[in-house]
Image (cartoon, rainbow, N blue to C red; front, side):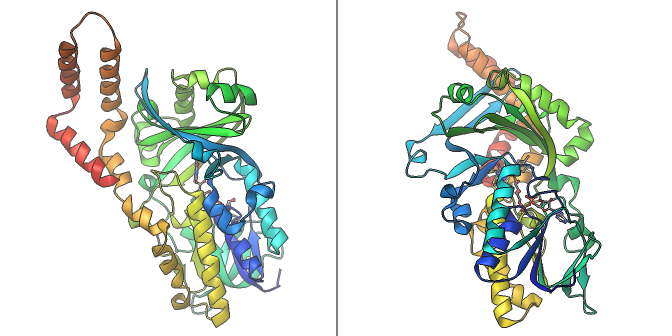
Length: 433
Ligand SMILES: Cc1cc2nc3c(=O)[nH]c(=O)nc-3n(C[C@H](O)[C@H](O)[C@H](O)COP(=O)(O)OP(=O)(O)OC[C@H]3O[C@@H](n4cnc5c(N)ncnc54)[C@H](O)[C@@H]3O)c2cc1C
């Protein structure tokens, strides 16, 4: 593979394909290498995408047969104890009409394939079943292309974009990014459960084509720092549960056991009843936070998406950060090609673009969120149980005066939480968001 391309992109996820689309739109010769048999074959996500950011790349995506599962009209948050839970939710008519496809669910296997087809139609070359094993460099260390596992393996390029996701041995091997430490990644498992469309409509109280997301915190992650989600697809539900990798290592809990417990929880079980398991996957999530974002550019290369640790844990926004960072990388490359300068100082503008966008703003704003969860394990252990106790007590009608119940609830709460610890929790929580 001796032909010289302007840009070689590693990974056909949202970051790599967005970059390929923007480059192809500007007549630039880009090739995307994807190790999966097809784009999406190796990808897992809870399945929520964001219309605003996809429309930057494909403005008329909903008319172009984008494989949308459901348009999200309601978001629920659950805080669960072992046997019960609190639920808050918000539904808005605006999301059915004026802001349709603000948030929507997709199956990544279908979506990534469709997205890559859009890039191919624009003129990018997407090469699947090919692993990029190393980067080529000149005598000064400047990146000059990629080495692949194909027989005719090396390809020269003016710039290489690493869009190879969180699980990127390449970034670590080349020294552009450290191997993430266990506390900087979460391990998540996902099961897709098939159910008839009308059963999902009924169980979630939604009209056809619309959907609900549920974000879940509490005892459900067996005392580990983690979350679970339930997302509605057209004819299936996506269930995901995950926790910090360091916590898995300490607690010796198996992710699939945690998922099985989650499926039997009284809040979740009725929603999945009678469903057939269709798919099961496991993947890492980038949780390093703002302080641990690696240098995202250098001589001849850029890093976008999860590979650059661009993930907002609190708002589960990763795919949009991937798309937008991919597009920013492409715009920076277009400028560099015009100047014929692929040095670090020429590619520095990529960082300025990120700094002037919601990506760095949000990641900076929430930089204390992951540490907050890590420093307050009670959020996943004693607190949900104490809150469950409180609700159960107040809702049990047994002739006990309410004042007496309140005293009992307070005493129970104080058993495991001192007043200073509760105040610290509130203060740290406030500062983290
Ligand atoms: C369980 C789970 C649930 C999630 N839920 C959501 C959600 O609801 N909404 C949301 O916005 N985000 C969610 N995310 C995060 C989201 O999936 C990522 O932020 C997003 O996929 C990042 O896109 P990317 O293009 O950077 O990387 P990826 O999507 O990981 O794509 C990287 C691609 O590179 C390929 N690749 C890697 N190495 C090589 C190599 N050496 N050679 C060739 N190809 C290579 C991979 O096969 C892959 O296709 C979730 C993640 C997980 C794990």
